[in-house]
Image 1: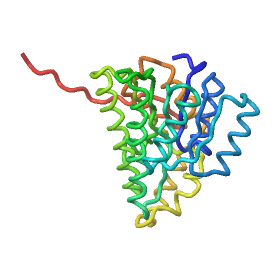
Image 2 (image 1 turned 60 degrees about the vertical axis):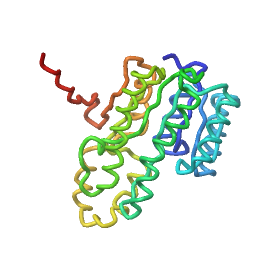
Image 3 (image 1 turned 135 degrees about the horizontal axis):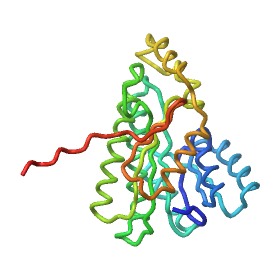
Image 4 (image 1 turned 90 degrees about the horizontal axis):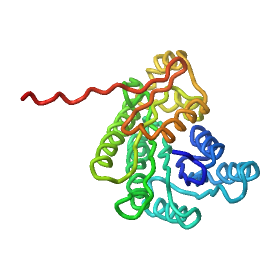
Length: 260
């Protein structure tokens, strides 16, 4: 997929991984709609990106991924402004083991909600142009982070949802690819605050620090992997692992063939 002229929506776009995603999509010719609840950071980023890439290539909208109404309004505004949607990055997320219901709501329900709203505009069966949806999961979506069981559960669910949607799209003819990004520890605010947000598992702070000491990557490393998942049209149903010392696609077991 060549990105020139394509339109992308990024949730959690104001800072961290979302900001890096937005920047790399713009660098490669896409138009980007930045969705975030942080109005000050979002407007500041849009202003900076507009100066660099042009006033007509970015749009910032306040949007809470927990709100169906706000999500629908944001996607409708995207279509009205840029004529359609080709790329969705379901990136908004949080980590707080004390606020476990909100963690599930943002990390999992937000991804499902964003996907289903986007389908209304992207699905080729209903007049959309098709495209690609990339969901930000985590290395904790493929293996446990013992101090963060709820965060781990949400990210496992994101990987499962992504793979199932990839299969559903291929079988149904939606024309949309689905992939998951699974980074290790990334230098973001989420990482900076992790030790204070372990809640009932705060006694595992030292264990968490041990995991972190094995290596932290930059948001730009994650953004490069996003670009790969978006542009490589052979990638569908993939989970791309990116760590400080490794980048690889997760090998999932295949269903055994029924003996004849």
